[in-house]
Length: 233
Image (cartoon, rainbow, N blue to C red):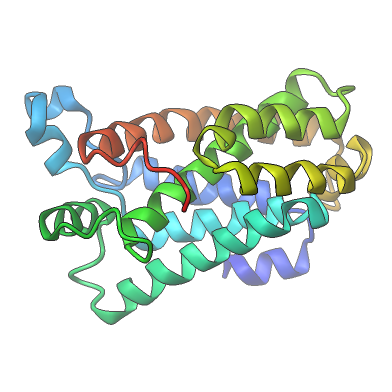
């Protein structure tokens, strides 16, 4: 349904992402369970719930936003796509068992494979960081609409992805920055046909207000499973 909507109304990724995230937040069990509701400590993290399918749908929408930045995001976009596919394949192999991302992290940690190159845990970590990057970039552009797009991308990359990339990845990212579109082109590509900049700005602010606390809770889970400091290969 949402895919058809987006095909008909180009530039509506932000709106669809808000819808997807709103449902995840509102539905009981659709977002991580706050520590206070579980007595705190380890039990809170074990009881946490990150629904696999909705999370991957959100990542797919964010991937389409990144694609609008063009060739600059080619490496990151490919990485996001591969990680989404890895988790989709795992989920499709046994939907009831793999309906909760937290269970995947827990199982792989128990098996001692969470840090493996092809683990679902590693895929989840990098998808989370890609969401971090997208939030930082959107915040950057909304905070300062006149900011140079290249500078906004570089600043966002530096605080979210660069700390976890090895030298080669960072070097490749610097070269890619030369291909960043101008600010106006990117902003225009995010707009739906029926909206103006003020509408888009409000939607971006809404999306960020939903994503930031959600990501904070996810990072808490990653830290619990000792995956928060994982670096690229």
